[in-house]
Image (cartoon, rainbow, N blue to C red):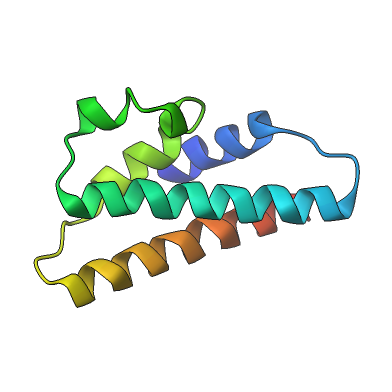
Length: 97
């Protein structure tokens, strides 16, 4: 189900013409994913997150982030944020091929 949501999300997101635009787009998506996961790890509720401007159009990323467990230490929270950013960035990059 998550893979389907991501596939639909990234196919709808945009279809840039130039390769550099695609890379920039994936970088931006990765940063949005990181900010969403930071809020998740800080304890923001799902309903409040869905109302934030960076969540509009990125609902699939929000849902995936909230499927992840919240960590109790700052170190583990930072690791979760970085891993989530890399996972979303990787998925975006793979979808361009």
